[in-house]
Image 1 (cartoon, rainbow, N blue to C red):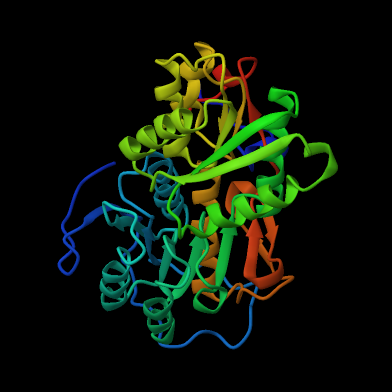
Image 2 (cartoon, rainbow, N blue to C red):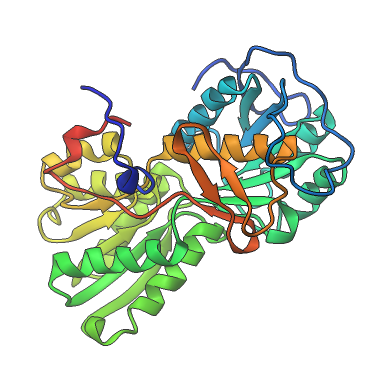
Length: 361
């Protein structure tokens, strides 16, 4: 199968290597060297942006995902690691094996001690990581949140896969269209503290208050903690507890694939509609066997690529994170920083049987 580069309007929202023990964390590290040796983080940030400044050589970037074995985040981080080579930097992925609220703290502390130029984090809990991130910033390290935001006062930028409102509202519309706008529905989320999940769910709930969804009833929000087996069990529990359930939204790649696996081998296949956020390769078999008709995602490779370039631009003084500044992001072109330091990758894309074979990630 050939890998397809998505059209500009779609690629934004479609939406594993050598191991090394971290001295202080006992976790996993994956490195991909650039072509120049890395310089230590600077002790102070530039007073103002200089868009004409070149990207510094030898920048050290570290990706800290929610958990190290999440397939979606592995794709994303690998793309960021590869992007760093384009500007002669080095990048690595480190992180915990679980997605608990406090599991990332020791990694932040270690990366700070190592003098990284930038820490890129997909936060398990927006506030739990705030203190350590502030300490890193005090030492001149740039903080870029991606996928799941940290509290705005604790980071410089947030690289958002799409408008949070658009993600939440579009998921409700997608499911409603497939079940005829009537019936009981449930949400299978990741962790209860995940910033992105909670924001999307709030918009889903708000969307459900609109008159056109008056015949839809949200009966439960369940949490699979971004764990495959727990998400599988939560799906089973939802279907047993709510025998009239018509549909499930799972806005997490781990959750939606686990739910699809359960439904595909159960009496609910063809009876209960499942949608959510997943990768094409992960969901292809379930689309082809009729378990899932439609789902959505952005391209995680593009998200990781953009995050790496944003971190490099910050560390080089090209941008400061202020609203209205413009970022040059390699092959993705220019992106403008919005309110609260947010950069949005782009709009949503829906996968179904008519297009899923065209993509390979």
